[in-house]
Length: 312
Image (cartoon, rainbow, N blue to C red):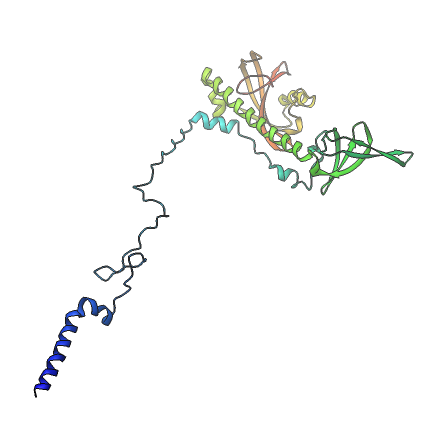
């Protein structure tokens, strides 16, 4: 009996000890704990049992509170009515992209060919006498040559000293493309500068003579005339005679009879005037321009810019 009681006492002691250590050390092993991970792991369960959000990576962008404040760019100044009218009256040219003009160098128009180019290497020209090749002569690199034809990457060039001599060379070993590109870029810059200058001159005229604003707004009464109007005949004759170097009669799109006007600028006086709208055709595209013809006694005396009254 005493042995039984001693054994029972020992068993009860073991059970009591197990219960004492059950929580918090044994409980997790018996019941398990959801996603308990070390502090340096990414998922930690908080006391409520919900997953805590991952800590922000040190490589991620800083919060708005810690980012350096970027100074915003000042807003562009709103355009005035005059600015908008001048842009409409003197628009920037819509120039055809160069690669479209030259067909990505596969179809370069004859008009785009430069007058001369140079090669990066010596060029050998055959000497032909009575149709027979009797030798060759080399021209050094950098010697001016005349380009005549481009097929693929083969550029046919002629010797300026003897145009009858021609040879094919690799176009990429010449400045052919560079010369065309430079000419194109120069044209674009020049046309844009011309428009800027026209706008500035027109603005100065408006400041000195606000009545000119009616021209920009199109408020001044005018009469559009067509081919059969006898008042336009002297204007057409002037254009046909080439009295305006930058435009032709074929490029005229409309004629507007303005009646009698007082003109200042380069030709001060009173004239009957006709404003002509042109679309000038070039290899780079079409460009609109307006010129005004000054008439006295049925004859064109001069051509001027409608806004600035300067000769053209």
